[in-house]
Image (cartoon, rainbow, N blue to C red; front, top):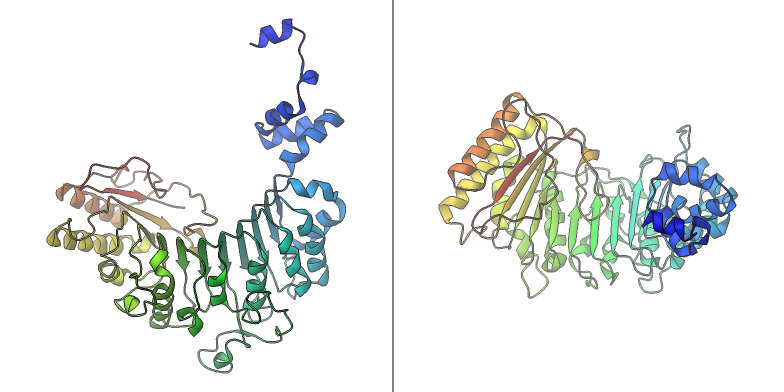
Length: 455
């Protein structure tokens, strides 16, 4: 084909612009940068690919980008990550220039689909209307990376921002601080959970009004995936707020200021209100039968649940009890993450669970289960985030008691006539990365048990 093209006299310059753009999109980023230096036409053809994914790693980078990059280029951004920490990591609240820079940038990012905001401090309320213009935005992550005591990020600001996005489907929130306006009971009371004051001036939302509290997120009709971590979930409104969305993925963390029992009750209360539509969930706390006592709908909570993720914070001693609580759900896949120090105990707990399944008969107890994945993490920040922002993990090696525990679990599964693991289990062997669900399903009545080491 190439030789025929040359004989007919065709050349790069004679190709249609659409075809040239398609060719450039296939190049690696370094090649695109080199191609952009050839001539002006090459530079213009490279702009959509060069600006497709933008990462602004500091407040200074954000301000420079907003001030120097031509605004017509902003429409090419599809993935945008912004961190408002200063480059020198100096403490203190974000300067007004950060909010000004966001107001300059965001309204012109009309094609952005994924937006991640790592905020060192709160933002000016003038930023909120900017999100109304982001019609293509479906995935929003807001992570508070500052000092919660000195520069908290108010739930009222975050809810106002999320509610302003017209077509939001995925929302991830980290370290959001309750507002004194909605949580007066937390003021001055043990265990002294941080609370934001002075956020009453955030304007009312056209639909939510002044109820800019975290449970009001359930009123966003387009929302499908919700992740909230390291945030106080004790607002009683979670139990009675009308649900306008059909959540498919739910990932609820815990508040480190509160006890395990308190966090468990909060999770159960939320599950009781919205769990009837959830297909996939991640658990940081144990669940009891009280989850169903909080049910607010005719359909029993978690009757559609197919995938369960147990995070590294999940208490090992509650694995069997929690899985028993969820035994009436049509669970097909179970993934477990734990620290390497907990591998032995976690494998033992999974053996107890599988033994219980064998005793009760797989036709009536987790009859749909066909896959169990176990992986280790070295840091909580490496933990799997379902739905939004899944992190890629590296291979690692388990040794000693951890490797022996994995091998015993796999051998136990073989004794139960389950499908063997796809990863090597011998001591010192590298364990295959298998946390992402495999597409090939085993034969009916069998489940795949996979293990993964993680850096």
